[in-house]
Image (cartoon, rainbow, N blue to C red; front, side, top):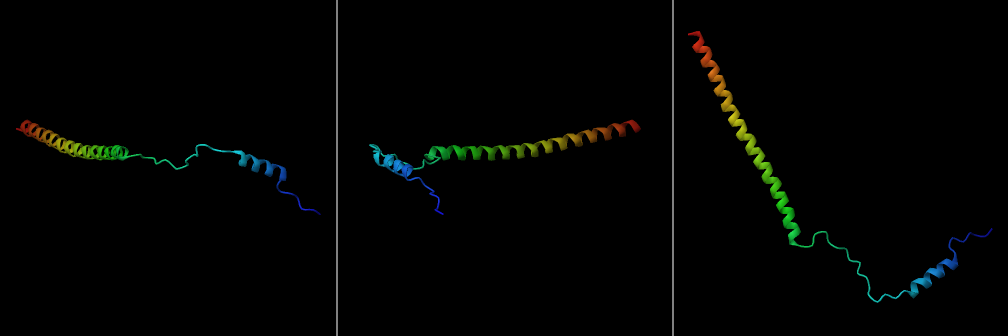
Length: 90
């Protein structure tokens, strides 16, 4: 039994001849382009990170301030209610 031929000699010689006949006048540079091409892109990224951080700090401050104001309002209402009850009993 003969071994089967895995490659056809005619197609291999055809593609080899095609590759030999290609002549490039301007060779193609296949260097990968960097994603960020300068300091300006990194500046934008840093500004976005800084703005998110400042927004987070502002929201925490606003929450703290609201909690303080709500506590004062609550205490005022409790005192007013206590005074009304106390004045009503007299």
